[in-house]
Length: 450
Image (cartoon, rainbow, N blue to C red; front, side, top):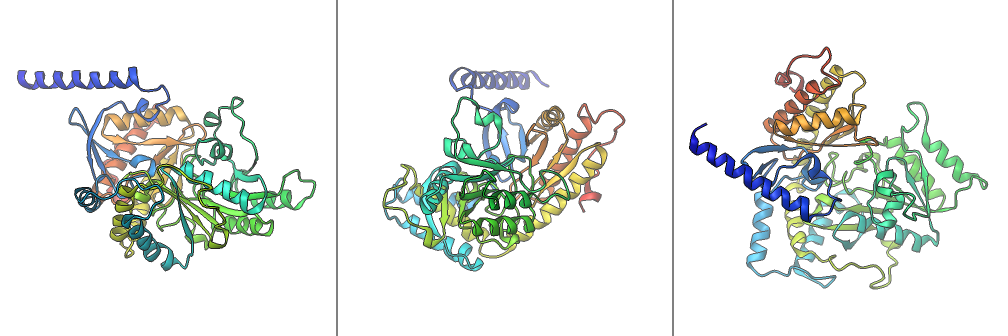
């Protein structure tokens, strides 16, 4: 390195230290993702992000599922820039705007009608937990009941109503929070193969002395995004839906992370043939990472009084613009679904190869919502550190953060996806648990990924 290059690098190091110190001294201790990825990011496009040092990282985090179409998609960006240049409405509460009308038209034409679905759309506020709160509140209003059935490993948000349905003890902050009116039942596969947990749900609800109050709602994810990528089978989902209906409870599907194409279809429940009473969407709905959350309501259940549930930022017109652009670009035909299916097969083959080399490890998830359970949170943390050092941004999930989570944008080019999987594979090999007796490199993955 020349003297000039050395000076430039020292200047970059100093600037990065200065910026990191700002976060350390001025931002709350509650910050989390940045603790395992301290780089200061500057720009991003597609599936690659850059930091102040000029380093680039393949993004297998994608805003925790908020960037299914990648960073700064050029068509979505152009739609937003044109709207801003034309002084379009930015904030509208629930006033009528052209941006909202155009989004609703596109959503109905490209998502609901082709699937034979009929829902009213409630704009609840900027985040997924806002929409979950609205779903729980509406279910209780419709049924006149308070109890909600939620499942082990489920994650639905951290505001108090949603948190009551969330299983993770770290977020629940027990015993300092009062989290009432939720009955926890075992998710599909909770007790291993051969035990249908829907049997237990049915038995407990059928038994007048089962001790479970009649539920207002049964709330579930078809793929548990934060709980460890546990996947509910179509058969189990249909049984739970039938049980809910027979007991007068509303079926609420939380599709915040699994929706918008993440599992291969727009809604994650399509393969099971479900028609939920209520559906919660957020994260990638806006297409560009802009805050947008909705509750889809079966028309006969839309019994709200005007203003009975609201939120100041439910009218984010910038998000309406990019959401419409995303629907029209990615959901007017089946090309994205085909891409996701191809990517999913490639990811699964790569994860299976890693699992074959790591005792006890196993792939989990479906679609582009897959990961590798490496059993130990410490091993997963070591793999993540190695991955970051080699240009891959990836996180983990599960009860002990033991599942390495591949959440690359759905639009990731084949070569970028392969490079990211190779880095992850090298991280698995380099982990302290895998080091004993393992050797080799991941860069010959092309044969396995085909």
